[in-house]
Length: 120
Image (cartoon, rainbow, N blue to C red):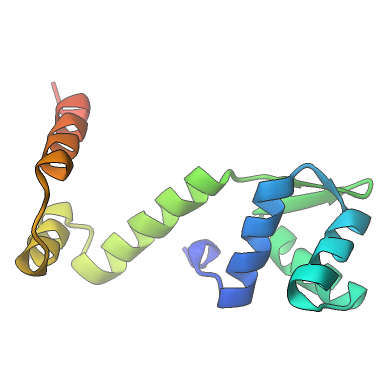
């Protein structure tokens, strides 16, 4: 599950790759120099970390995602739910709505999701 936990700079770096992929590793170093003021070696170190975690791959100098941003975000959400609310969506929802009012549109959207995923 550690796969879904990223530090702030790792998160920004991943978002940069997802935004531009497929991207050459050279272009990625240039973007990181501009966006983060990183040296080439820093970019490659960070890329290696995220490749080791199976988020991206650097094959023949081209960086591509092994996991989409949407799948990654879904995994982060599941991990948060499991760690914080013992995997209980109703517990999360109860905690969230205790302090936040839902708009009619949000209620409609949640009901639509429930109807789409209803068992049986």
